[in-house]
Image 1 (cartoon, rainbow, N blue to C red):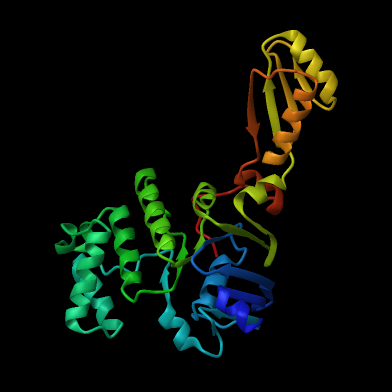
Image 2 (image 1 turned 60 degrees about the horizontal axis):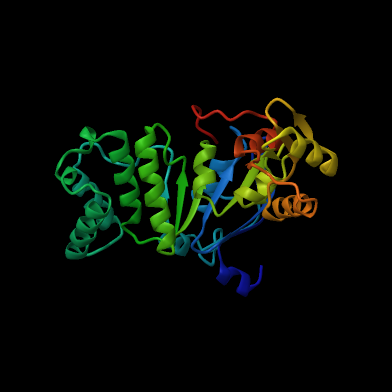
Length: 320
């Protein structure tokens, strides 16, 4: 890994390996996460996602390979890595016997901030996360969404360059989950790098700049959400016509289609890309065939996950 690459990457991983006894959890994985982006690591239960986060956040050591976070070698320079990161795990770090403000000021003390600076940072984060009124109340009275917001606010006390979010919205209701999504987007827009693990594939689809799929300790695919979806068969363009004559003409011109004479539609296999759509419409235009309407259907991340890992998603079970 060159110095130039390290300067461009918030997280870089080469050949990372980890076993527990005779069980191989990570079998030589490579990752590259650009600075200021949202990166999601997906995989079934036991695929090694949390193990990856634990290694990158210096909680455990790898058996082989190398990893750099914020330009620092995770194994050789753990202290600078810890100073550059924040971690919000599957289980909240909030002390429920303290108020929200007291939790934040405790984190400020742990980061060796002065009292005045700690109070300033706590007040700033309470306002930013819409917790000003709740900040005087004990955390045990918070709703699930409020607790997760406080947990993330505590992570931000140290102004981290990289944040690891391990299943950050597990157990939240849909409104609270979407609120957390906006917070994550806002962090990325400020230049913070987000490394996300999640079982909610809609979450990964909505948030991620890039995704890696981990299965049996290996990375089986990487790409943007759209790139991954285009790799999976089953995508098509559904063309609707105003009359049977146009339908018949289009079917003859296009050839490999599924025809529905009652609905006046043709289903054309496609990867859903703009290039494929333009090529199809240009071809029909060359033959002066008018399309009354169209719909592009592409596989979703559930299809990607099932195809690549052979397992359905299970949103109720936390991962390792």
